[in-house]
Length: 221
Image 1: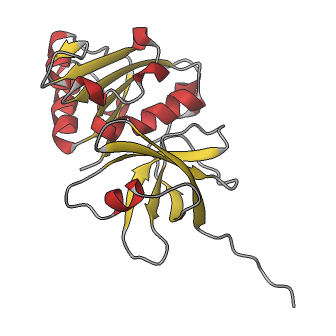
Image 2: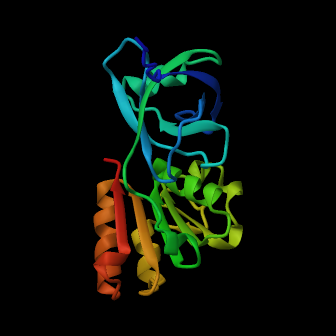
């Protein structure tokens, strides 16, 4: 009788880098796992029932997986992951999700990525995976030091909107920036982050003639 080998969902941590006091990136071994940029995984510690969903931050062609995590005051998993040292084990399921780019969007379509906070993660994966994208990235944060690894983006394509200090390119919310800089109705828009931002931006896009079929959203909370 031939036995069937099942793929383990236990992966080793390769390292962690801290971007702010509460935000960090965990790098995990990939073990050949296939995914499309924009998908997410469910991550936690082995032997526990607590898992949280995180968009994959790394590109499709890298030999590791990364997730961008914001530590939550009453969160369990975000606090646990922050303490993991290289060699520690994680339990991972996935990938899941359909917040991905179609072939025609990857090969020349005008794209506008709009994120709040750690909602920038799938866009980082898009840009790493498809270096020739014609994109514009608008990132809304509270403070300028939350421009997570903005050096990875073309400065001419990146707009940081900081609502509580003046360290961004624009002082204010993403919705304010779009109100002063009307969106292109012929571009495709991808929105990722908190629900308030997404609802506000969706309304602005529609008011400026963007067809609903060109608007794609991934709500974090």
